[in-house]
Length: 176
Image 1 (spheres, rainbow, N blue to C red):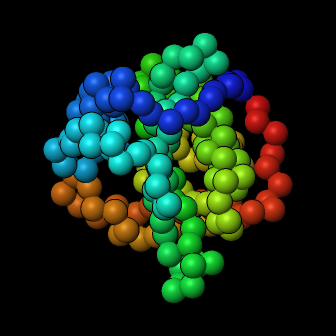
Image 2 (cartoon, rainbow, N blue to C red):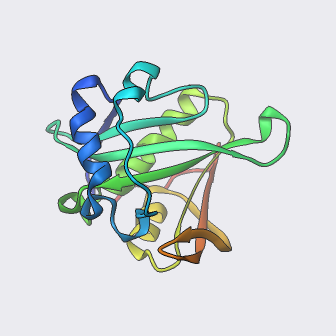
């Protein structure tokens, strides 16, 4: 099932919703619960949700209903600035999962980053047991690259992550 989404920058009016999402275990899901207390997003309104290397966008349905967020942060593969890649994260409301919104949002943020930055690589990782994220990443057009063993500390233990990458110039498959 293909779903269309749009991405938009958060605004001050979104802070209560973003704070509620950040505080909700159901929204975060088991694979995004790192046991840290939520922080208010109010400060981010003043400083902006997008800066030179980090960003957060709200994922909306075509009808304009907010259903989640997608964000990016730097991943460095060497000292030159050209070695910068962006690593993605996505969180969707439980009722929006399994409908194709995740793959569409991931594809849209890759297109956005390649259109607005010089970055050559966008990547994402997910727990080896998170089959839903694996499907969404592959459906979006990411290539599975390998396993980062013991890379993420969550729920009192280290977890293996699957690494997915997209390099500028990779031909994306059609979204289904």
